[in-house]
Image (tube, rainbow, N blue to C red; front, top):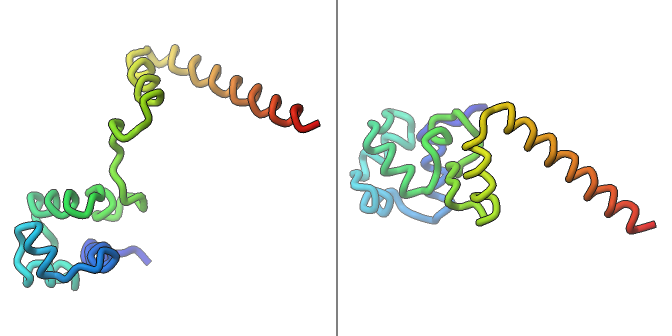
Amino acid sequence: MRLLIGDKLRELREELNLTQNEVGEKTGCTVSMISSYEINRREPDLDTLKRLCNFFDVSADYLLGRTADAKSYNPNNLPVKQRELLKYFNKLPLNYQDDVIRIARLNLLDYENALTNKGK
């Protein structure tokens, strides 16, 4: 069963042990608005959706049912080495990106083989 926006909002609020009033105060919504969203009587407008996503630290895609992954992708949250790799990778033309992927796969196979042979 696919959860609706309101179901997800209620689930997120309950995970944080918050009341509808507390969520309303933090997001600029009234209790009746939060209640209406949670029982799927109405859906938040775009501005309210953004505020709710920011408050709960989830993506709009998650609330809209487009993904099961609640967290939005933020490259700034990646470790330094991964950010550096992405910075250079994204500047490459597609055919060079394919080469980088092939090399990464080969390196991973080498690494896995080394681990397997080390245990022998």
